[in-house]
Image (cartoon, rainbow, N blue to C red; front, side, top):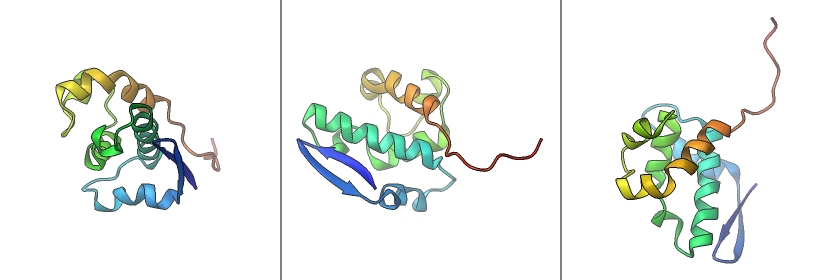
Length: 110
């Protein structure tokens, strides 16, 4: 379960629900980054006392997870991310994308 905070209330939603956005994807989104971005958006929305969709749309988060931009220039090309959102959230988004860790699993033999 992923804990999601909204305006001083705590909700739990199955991680599968959070990742359901990937199902409509034209290409594979990185589920680790998508989950991280969804959780970041919920925390940011709660801190700003606004609905989550007012931060960034589901489609924009999905596009960011798919593109995995490496810098602001690449992030600026993501559909749905305008200049204001880029200025306000760009550094945080890039940091989140590059610090999301893959799940621990079996390693490939060397």
